[in-house]
Image 1 (cartoon, rainbow, N blue to C red):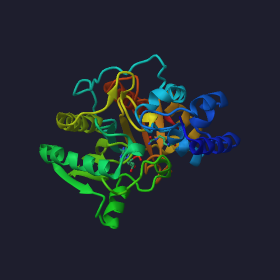
Image 2 (image 1 turned 90 degrees about the horizontal axis):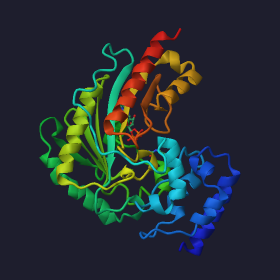
Image 3 (image 1 turned 45 degrees about the vertical axis):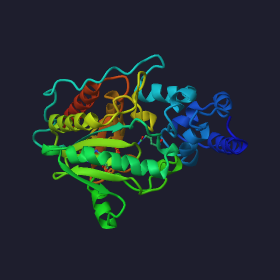
Image 4 (image 1 turned 180 degrees about the horizontal axis):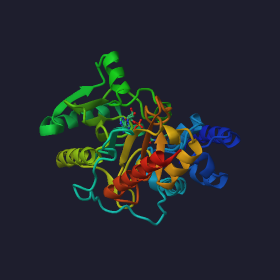
Length: 355
Ligand code: ADP
Ligand code: CIR
């Protein structure tokens, strides 16, 4: 059972949340009855409701506000997680993630051969390593172990995927900042992750692997144990996706990942469950961007998410938006990619047609 200290923190936090005008799903879904039912519960890892919702309690401007402090949270606190998952992914409580299907290798081409709209394309996926807990339950040694564990895998990558590992420990600040500014490396000091207890022992065990062209990259121990990604200038989705799939298949040869029958690959944030794929373009659509209502309507229609040019919670810069598939759970990898590909195709059509 949750301790008296945890209970009193929960009560205080809940009262503040309840009085606020927070737009988060946490605020919308955690009604009093649910709160009173879940506040006493604890997983076998020792995680409480507080561990799952403190990010949303501290950051009232959260969109979601909830993380899974350990894999069991998805079932112990299912009342809350199921509602968030259902709305975010349109995934019903009885639905199941289909088996992995990357689709045919030549399914996708170039979204924008003339290069007028699409600045760059990126596809990422997340993996949790078997045998390790999620961030809030990880010790400093766990972070070091994961970083060490990945080194033989990285040394074995060859051909286009061959590269080097760059730990955050000892990385000069200017080098780190340039990698962030160039969209390769995760940012530092994300307040949503910090409040979720995901940044302890920073920068221990954190780092980034990349090939010479920085078109294949792996983040270690940021929000998830692994973030595997492929990116390049322009709109060639086929090339970018193909490279990521190759990389995932290689990394999978030496590592086991955590997956559930219902949710597919398990991630720290419920928005990333399932395929964990976020396929995005950085795109310039000045006419649509001048009519935000229409732009947002179109994005919703095609299940696309609009982010700023520096990633989540950032603003657009120089008219560049990040558009990606919103849903990742309940559809296959191929279907996720297709949702993004078809959606962006329609967005470009609408931009061309707009007066
Ligand atoms: P994630 O995609 O892993 O959920 P973010 O939204 O924070 O996390 O994005 C991480 C980084 O990737 C940011 O610097 C962002 O600008 C960059 N990025 C995302 N999509 C693209 C893209 N299509 N082209 C170039 N950079 C991108
Ligand atoms: C929020 O609720 O706004 C943050 N906790 C982020 C939610 C989704 N993004 C993510 O997993 N990176």
